[in-house]
Amino acid sequence: QRLENKYSSDPTKYEHLYTMVQEEVEKKTAKGSSSCTNGLLWLTRFFNFSCVICLFYCSLIEIPIGVLVFTHIFCFQGNGLPC
Image (cartoon, rainbow, N blue to C red; front, side, top):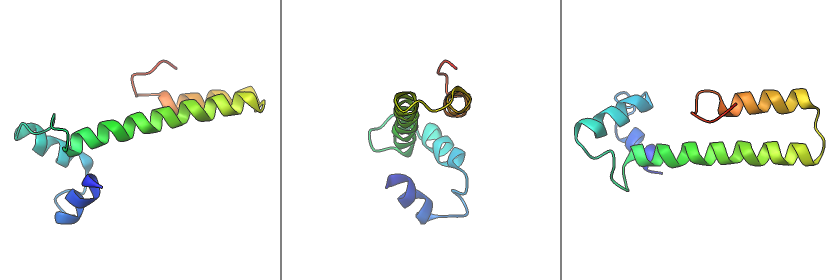
């Protein structure tokens, strides 16, 4: 919600998420519990968790290994998590 509110306040200025984060870092508010940066961190954690759940579910219903490998690489590549 906070990301959407920030974006709605000035869609042109906040066209990219980087702009929101950069502004909060410069103002030293990025580590606050109500910051957009913190919201993005939790959103990233949610997506990573969702990928893990999907991989687990796929393994239970015996999805072919090629699909599992693709999903694993798609979910975790570039997120600092092991591939």
